[in-house]
Image 1 (cartoon, one colour):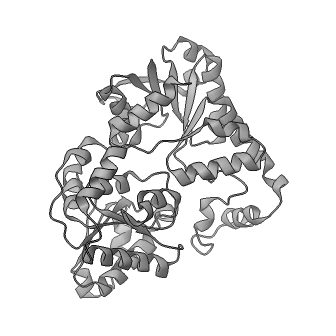
Image 2 (tube, rainbow, N blue to C red):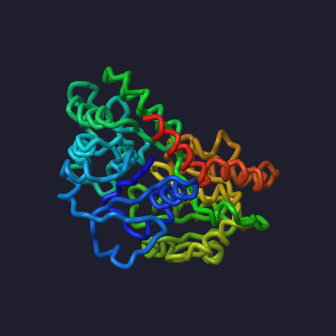
Image 3 (tube, rainbow, N blue to C red):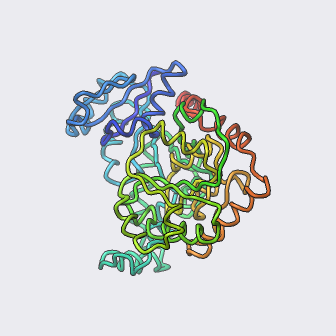
Length: 387
């Protein structure tokens, strides 16, 4: 069996993330696998361990391309977006089995409100955001039927859908049942995202009172950047024995948010920009808590890396964090998206560390077994072989 990953916007920095790690995991377990993507300048000197097939988008929109391609199964990143449905039609007409990689929390349509409604109206309010808030809250099923039909069409075309957390799977199946397509539930499957070997094989250091947060802070609506900073500052005021390290992209926004923070707190709050992966591993090895108050996620790779290094994970009650916290075994989720609730979860988690509730080696062992890229690849290969 040959399995190809289709990711049209793939770029080299995604290799340590789920697309690259799925491919490398498939190769690790002996599956013939390659990447299919749109040709781009970023890939000119890129030489990964997997083969890369580059063509134009017009090529991919041709049935002939897929009929000539020698793959048996295509793992297609579509995010269940309508724009990819014509492409799936061509894959199917070309004789391919297609697994959709949804990278989703499963809130894809009525009756569950979209996660975007978690963004307060006053935060960058626009006519579009106001209309979205009103439209999603109208309790009339017929208003949502066109959107639902588009999503269902893509799932119907596919041979299976992969979604990244158990609660996201429940959301997706609830959507299908609501729209009278319970027959499609058999096509939906939970498979988590994989973690790179450097976080699976490394030793765990001596845990210290450190809270780590890293991500794309420029994406403030999803990552909840302002609330993250405000909560960390309040936490450091309460827990004077703790320090915090924040890094990633968009940290200039964070610097502006902490300009007026008391010096005692500022001295215990380190803000960095881009950090090399070896340094990330070092930070996680010694940290106790990974803090991620996102408004939505598919399955955060950063959170998974932290768990595999023996950290606990604290954040909002989104589907993936409810899974990763494992009912308190490896983290704490807040009851709501309010700052007070999220701060209380962070304080609660620190007390769990004080009382020796957490055992870093046990957290790491549990999650390494589930998130090792070879384990994830075996789940995908097993699923592909049954199509």
